Length: 496
Image 1 (cartoon, rainbow, N blue to C red):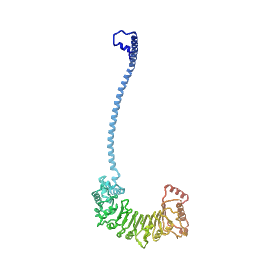
Image 2 (cartoon, rainbow, N blue to C red):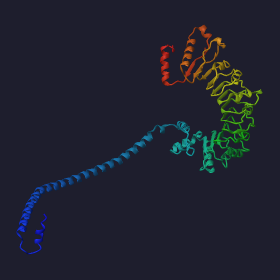
Image 3 (cartoon, helix red, strand yellow):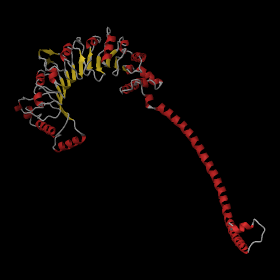
């Protein structure tokens, strides 16, 4: 309590206090006594509460110690159980590994499994066969003993790949492949090679297939390194790895003479000029040309591939529109298969006449039609398989030239495939047993319905009806549409 200034000043001297000072001092004294009594009562009331709180504190401290002790015991037990669990899992994994079916798999079956695994494309620096041989000693023994796993060598020539690295991989693979024919794939990724690695490999007598994706400059280096050498390979694939190589020329004359016994040749050099002067290859059976070629004439190639069986051309232009037609036919006596995609028929066969007396299978996809195509078909009545898609024109009129078809695969045609004798066709396709549509719509459904109705005619009528030998009918359709069609045909009793 604060005293008044008059009372405070009285403590600084010994004079007799005045009456008002005495009255003020008595008031302050009485107030102080009352306040002391209140404080003493508050202390008396709070003291038991303090003692009770201290007691509770001691109890809580003891409980906290007990909880901490329990936590420590549980944590210790959990860690011990985790250690035991790891030990048990180790035992389980060990026993599971011992009991795994792959351990009981014979080596020859394991080698077959490895073969399927190696069919999956792998990183060129970490081939699947190498990874399989690093699993365990048994897998290494089986993988190394399966010589065919090492018969495909992929060399992606990157800046980090040195010649000694390439030679080491080649040596490892050839030693493990033994006598199995080797397939070699080399890609320079559009970069010029100072030294082509194949010149160190040309002594191999087991090299059966070479797949090269090179720039024009690397191809020149490759030809220089190959000069004077002979590789007894069966299959050669050449592809330009550059995006724009219109100004380059691939000298096939020198390279083809170095491959003896060549049976399959594939060229995919977009925009490259290809030398027409190439050697005769009597062993060649398959010729595949893919890409937009400038100033490229197919006839010099075909005239030197006298025993060709398969001819495949795709995305092809030749720019020879003003060249006169060669009156002397070019005959390929062994040709059986023609596969054309995205080509201009006039560019290919508008300048010479091709004769293939054994031609059986013709596949046409997105090719332009011309007057030369029906003429070509009429010269080859031996055709038994015909696959045509994306070609404008009246399909029935085209098929009139190949009356002895056995298999026909076609897209939707607006014109009907069901003909009567008054259409100018006398009993067409007496041998056709398989018909496939690449799409399906209501018109095709109606035509199939008509075919089935014709087949249900009397015996005499059936003898006058086309498609008399038809046994298999198929088409490509979505599951929903297929289900609707089956339900509709079932209601019409079409499956009886």
